[in-house]
Image 1 (cartoon, rainbow, N blue to C red):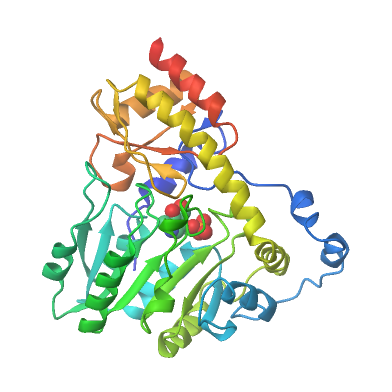
Image 2: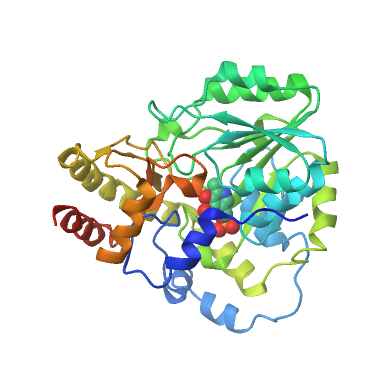
Length: 368
Ligand SMILES: Cc1ncc(COP(=O)(O)O)c(C=O)c1O
């Protein structure tokens, strides 16, 4: 199988480590190794003594226990640790699908949700969000696009790029449909924990449905993308065993130091999540003010959760605007073309500490 190039990742490959202001990143502000180790007395000495051999392919038991504690009714044996959230998307699609199968994917979405399925010969229907409203896809559409060959529904909540979160009644309705048709419900919950309003925190699909697969990662809401630790949580034993066996052909097992650090991080998960939620709350207030002043150029939709927003650009081609902006001002915004979502929106990331400076640079570039 040969998936087509991943537009967003190719875009970041060009700019991520050479651009002054990244104003479209989805990973929140990170921390140093020293800061992370300081969360627990003695952690630096334990890390220093760590043996650098292979680790258990499913993930070490301490880490799997720390992850399982994030869910109700899930235990360590239901957790399969992977390299970031990207690897389990690839592995799930490979294990769950065959050529000719049909998959429904909430859209816009992280491209691997649909490109890996397409490369496997599956047909993908897009369950499209109302980007001019609150970012919700129409619940009635979902029932309409299910076919006899449908195998899985793929959702992202909180959503990248819109920040939309399914409310509980809508989440329950999706679970009910999946259950009625015997489908897997793969829920990308990479931004779980970023919800600023407690009313937006709902159960994970692995808690609600026996064929629910919840995807998690330390990359986004915890600010630890460089650990490359992600996981799935599911009570579907057969899928779990299939994915564990498939992993033997991909990463085999994870990095020992990363597993140690992720376990430490999750033991202090609330501290890390609060740090990022405080930062995104402060940054969102600045974005509200900026977009109110620049309303002739952007149509702002305040995101409910996550670290990204997806306002409409009213000045023509978003791709041309982003190209010009990065060249002239060293400010990176992501055009909606990287999401296969037209050419009239930009993704803004608001989880980084230097957002005030980046926003000033954007403001100056627009003024000039
Ligand atoms: C919705 C979503 N899923 C998965 C990923 C991949 O995350 P990771 O860096 O943990 O592999 C991303 C990264 O941007 C994402 O936005």
